[in-house]
Amino acid sequence: MLAARLFSEVAVRLGVPAVIGELLAGLVLGPSLLGLVSPDQTMKLLAEIGIILLLFEVGMDTDVFRLAKTGAKPIIVALVGFVLPFGAGFAVSRYLFGMPSLASLLIGGTLTATSIGITVRVLSDLRRRSSDEAQIVIGAAVLDDILGVIALAFLYQFAVLGQITAGSIGQVSLYIVLFMLLAPLAAKLMAEVIDHFDKRSASPGLLLTMVLSLILLSSYLAHVVGAPEIMGGFAAGIAMGQRFRVSIAQRLRVPFTPALNRLLSASPELAQRLESQMRPLIHAFTPMFFVMVGVSLNLRAVDWGSPLVWQLSLALAAVAVAGKWAAGFCIRESRLRQSVIGLSMIPRGEVGLIFAQLGYSNGILNGELYAALLIVIALTTVLPPFVLKWFYRRWGGRPELAPGAAEQNS
Image (cartoon, rainbow, N blue to C red; front, side):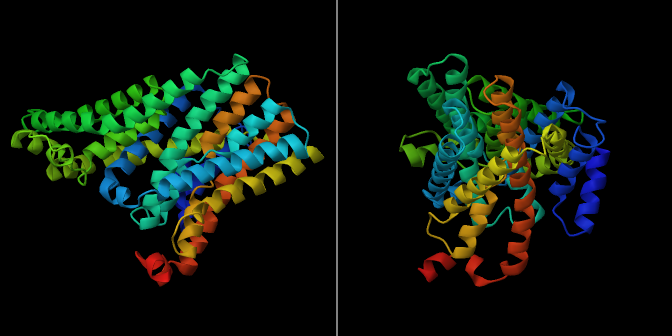
């Protein structure tokens, strides 16, 4: 925690996004350099809590109706950003380098990943998390995570069982969709119960305890249905946010009572109290996640003298960047905003590491392939924050990035 704070402080003073300092702290402390910290279970748990809390904060700040107004744009960005890197990564590995089919599939799957945690943190560091392009990126990154889980289940079954059951993949997909639809509504009802008891509590700390329990419960339920745990934190954040309003009577045209509609309406006072109590906890735990990403990147495992490692990593890095960047240009927006959306989808981070480690631990990837993927993950995680900052510094004040500019330009 101290290293994350020190490195992020230095990074900000040098004009670099804070998240780069936290990633660098992990690289310095981890096996890549000093070897003082290893990715053990305790650190993984703290990092997981950190990313869940970060996604809770993102959910609280997300205006779901504004997100809904973006229409099919996040879906298009997510689908194109999934299909292009997967297909190109498979083709490069299989036909250009002659890798086995299963290894090529896993490499393609690794390139589909988008680390929503890193993406959101970069946009926060640049103070653009509430921008229109950020809303599209958040929606696309959430969908990308869901697609990634389905792809991981697909590849895991193929690798371990040697066969793929369409029923099990379909079941996981259905559970995830139902969870994301129902979880915010259930969490909203629980939020009203929490608000009721907190106003009548005789001792301090009840709100923080109950909300933290709700977040972790939601994350556990997400895990049970096969969704990423961070989706549970995101759903709980949406439910607790000040902007979240649900009018069942209007949407379903069912004559519910006014009392139920009041129960499902937003509670600005609760959201304000919650922000003041939760933000310090989020800021304390979130850096642990980014340090963990750095610690997990063991660059000593890379055979720096192998020509195959360099050739494959450079080819895959080009595919990884081009595939995600191209996704931003598949929607109707200004050119600059399209570039920002595409760049924001590039960081692989911990999601890419999960794919790579699955392949390495199951013997699908050999040392050279694993090393090449580590280089790709490191490059795609570290470089986009710098490019995004340059984009916003160079063009952030221009009218092309203003809301509605795309329609005017079209």
